[in-house]
Amino acid sequence: MTELSLYEAFILAIGALLLGIIMLVRGGDQTIDAAVYMADRYGVSPLVVGFTILAFGTSLPELVISVFANLQDSAGIAIGNVIGSNIANVLLVMGVAAMFVVMRVEVTKGLYKDLGFMLLCSIGLAAILVYFGGISRYAGLGMVVLLGIYVFLQYQASKKETINLENEEMEVPQFDSPRQAYLFLFVGLTLVAVGAEFLVQGAKVSAGLLGIPESVIALSIVALGTSLPELSTSIIAGRKGQYDMVVGNIIGSNVFNILMILGVTSMIKSIDPGSFDPQLAEFDIWVMLLVASIFALILVISKKISRITGAVFLLAYVAYTAYIYAVNLV
Image (cartoon, rainbow, N blue to C red; front, side):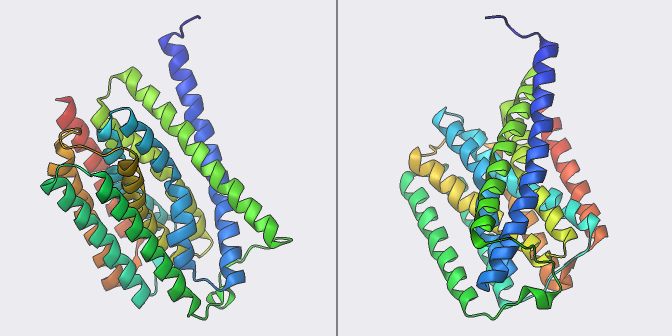
């Protein structure tokens, strides 16, 4: 078998990156259209749709990567992927989306609960990593059960609301039948998951050719790649006026990342103490908690994410990424 040259390998990696981006954008568009149609048809609020369907679909790349990485004794990639993705979801995804359009949200009891639950999950993960040094199978099971209970309560609460998306002046896509909408949703989520996998593999190969350490790859390139579904769906939703869905998608994805991704990953194989870089528990997890807290505070106080705030978020993400590279490459 003929080995590829460095140049040929790099070209293939770039090709995978471009293909992944195309699939992500197309898949994100189809997912948004189908999800909004379903929300309008069944009277479910956009916030809940973003918290459940979109969050689960766009978290599939993190799940696949984290499970495979942990099975291959690379727990640092599994945890770093989640921490890095949660940081990127707020600073990068919300930052870029807000620069396209100001994200105005209605502060409701539901939003308070969602933000509070996101912060609770972030604090819980920090406590587990700091005090226990890992995540056991039982802890993983508890995380998955907790997520299931919360999603069920979200659904029950949404059924008691009277929601009409058209009254919120949002564009509702049309499908010939509910079956067609379900098909578009399935195809869209599939494109998102497969596209992210192409992109992440291309990014990892490129990083490997350039000699970037594994711990930095997990927090930056892998996290960035697996956050692109959130970025594509959030930009598309924001430009269509689905502001509540954007916020719900970010909050839901962060919760799913912690409870579902790390929960399922540790259920399959426990994440043992000492199996990952100490920097993740000593620094990066606290950055994630700080970012989540600032995000929640801004939403509650100002009820919007302005273009200026979005720009600050983006600059903060660039600074964080530059810092972890500088520290690990010195």
